[in-house]
Image (cartoon, rainbow, N blue to C red; front, side):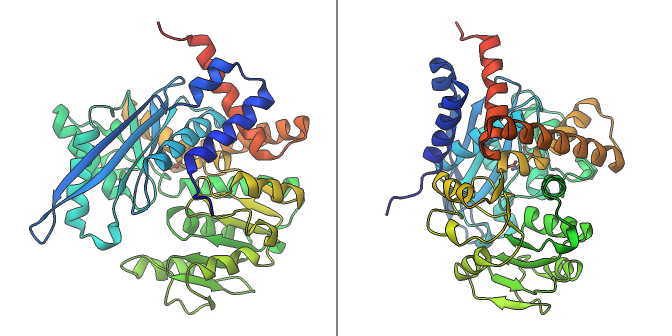
Length: 422
Ligand code: GLU
């Protein structure tokens, strides 16, 4: 079996669109490389008075359209190639929704579920200090990703601010409201995904009450997506997380499930009694993917829908809340089977869009109300959906290729206009 490499997958996706766009060879080569990648070691005193050293990365793929932007994830499976791929996907994502950023990503190889809060704080502060040579409000602005949250962003903001000698809220987004965060940021990725799904449903003339939803992952993205789709009137019939899965053919009581998760120390769905249990991981996810539902939303990690399981999928729409959940081989199978894939670089772009609003508010020290945030997010997500759909219809291609054509073309144009230095 070949080992999955997300960077190779990201390059393969770029190559496909380069072909389609007839991209200049030099520009293609430039985009196939990351501008810079920093590897740092992060030594910290653990609670048992020993020193442990973690490996961390910050990768900036492209800065042609503006400062670099992208989250930081804490996960045992983080690799440099994964972070490079995620940085490249951020470049396209920011370009698809047309916000003035390039793409970056960061990660630390660690298992935060086995660390105390104090250890996570030390890890975050030392990581920030190590990467402070390349981050900053005008350079590269981190944000939350897998296993990082507003508290982690507070520590990044504080550590960076201590270094420069003044409060610099614009160095990071996804912060708590009290220290320069934005209303609506915490739930923005889920809200943006709901907006894209809603447009796709209208396009296919699907009624919310007849649209059954299955969601893989119940972290920040999966749980807020469940909430918004439930509010839209869609029955959310199944969800999974690392603790297993839940199924209720009449639709789960989403508000009760959210309240349950909120009460759990690790925020897991296990122990909720409002549905039947799907067997534990990975069986729960395999069962989830086979369900007879209208929409399947992978909201966890990369490499979930592959050539091995794509043929079993019965959903009409796949909505990618996660980054890179579907492999190019699976894409071909899904396209042949008539499954509409709403690609990650469009579907989960709501998070970085409200991050952009947060950064603008921080730089101007003027803060918007929630109504303005929601209105602007809706405007950008709906506009982007229709731009991508128009390309797909014109070019007779799937939405992923269409989104790539839109995003890569915008970045390539910036490269062309700026030229190659010196
Ligand atoms: N981590 C999120 C993503 O993958 C958000 C990045 C950001 O807000 O900068 O899109």
